[in-house]
Length: 218
Image (cartoon, rainbow, N blue to C red; front, side, top):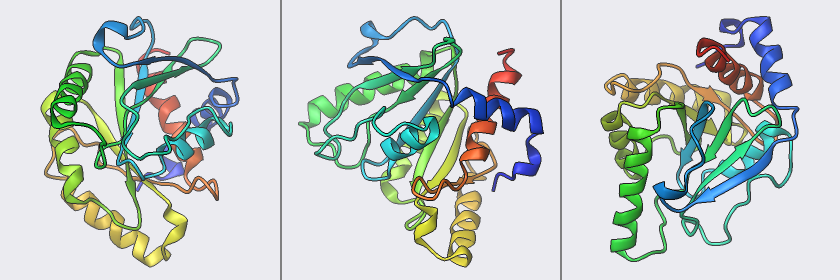
């Protein structure tokens, strides 16, 4: 589990300042032809359709409606890009997986786009993979884990809804998840437990993103 103690006071403060900016929606793209220029670092968020991804992004930036959840889980099939006024970073909201309401051929075509994005986006620093703390890793997560490993993209698990289970159960989920990730080459060996409702873990998440930017000269 990521510990605030592993982050410097400067990184925590930089993370706080970064996410008090007026973040805005930049672009939604259904294919690689409409991607924005790769002129700044990118952090992407992936997860099952009901994992609370929109809530986490909104809590991260301190806005209520920056990221909007679809009424039908799995319906949104775009990469949504958000940016800050200083153009320091793109936040990328990837479509939820696991409940795609689409014909198989469209799902296959979209998976091809995702693979190409992950493998070819040179400015992508890390993917934060959101997992519901109440359930931990499940079989539907295997495909995205394999895809991330295959693309050699650094990814880190972020547990959502951590306030919905007992602390002792949360520690067990973290332990099981770390054990499963130890076998995966592209997984970052630390987990951030969050609650969008309670604000749990967001200092760590913001600080981690600031740390990533700093390590890439931003």
